[in-house]
Length: 272
Ligand code: ARG
Image (cartoon, rainbow, N blue to C red):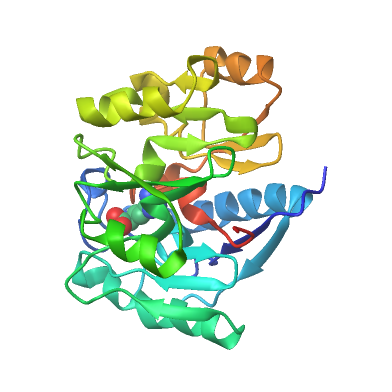
């Protein structure tokens, strides 16, 4: 079913693992099967164009991680807050993403240079609750919280990540339609787990175990009742099915080697 959702993606023309900035990249430098990566990206693109609109940004040589458009920045209506990447390797992407949004008439603002913030990798809008979940601990810093709140006029709930395999919020938490929340509790510190339990009713929480978390089941693209993931166990797919979601699995092994999968490869543009 076609939903009104719009996603930004970047073709994997120059995708590679050419440096190591997260644990998933270890041992994977220059180990990408390019033909397979292109085929996997295209399969995700095809699934999303069936149920949403997909826009594209031109890939840039020298920015192998630019495929992960979730990290471009944060969209709220016609406002776009450009990411400030923690590692220099990804800072080259910043002007390209900023230009894409400027060219389309967005009100674009920049992070202060000394405040790393990695966009929708670390800030996810919970439409049912009306707030943004924001995570710090690995890439974004806590100081980004105030900047996001001020620039985008959003209510922000800060969570702290503690397991370096889940270095971005979108690797371990995903707000779904109807107030459901998919998350891997072990990726957060105790106060953050308590905050999630306080803000999301038990009946709406879907705690994901390590097996699913490690295959990036929380890194899901949510488009209406469709949930697109790299892989999910039957138990998780059934659990989501009982809540009215249809799980679509599409292998993204080549992108997992860089530490990303379905959700990281997309940036939702229709956020308000
Ligand atoms: N190699 C990329 C990095 O470490 C992967 C980014 C994945 N993106 C995400 N939103 N989790 O920055």
